[in-house]
Length: 268
Image (cartoon, rainbow, N blue to C red; front, side, top):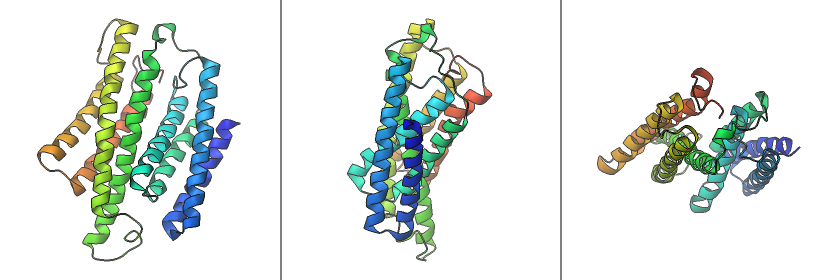
């Protein structure tokens, strides 16, 4: 029931945020924010109920992981909203969160217990850090899309649909950078905690499992992007494109590796 309520509220919130993008009226903003906050609360209760039922973090299969990913996207958006007050970001973020939870609902799942060898307090630490990092990278992806759309309007010297609806290029670039600086240390700590967990579970910190290898590739992509921003002044369009590329690599690491490559991490 809680999952169905969450799905319904996220769907209505997505429609409301798209209405905000189209009309930009305060009433739409209040409705969209209330619906998303209600959906997030229902989602949090649903995840808590699963945790109490399973006795472990509910991220042991792909549907559960996609649902948790949707939760982290909404969580970091609500957090960032306190800083930037960019309601229109929700118009790009909520469809992504809704798509993730819709796929989770469509996929067959099981509530099989986690392999006893993998039971450890490092499991929820690793999962939470990694997914929160993914959530911030998801926002960086959305801000990168918004940047490219706004830049197209500005360079074309025409006031099209997005010109008055999106923030300035400076604000979008700042949001992109802020999300990267928050997501990268979380991803780093997620990988480190995962290595410690691997040592506890399998007796080795790193085995070049497909998930481990692609996690390292994802880390290197974002490390290169941040290094380029800090050292060579990569900003604006280049940073936006690389944020989109980085998130594409992250999605392959998260979903593609599970579906296409076999390894010890296929339980999540």
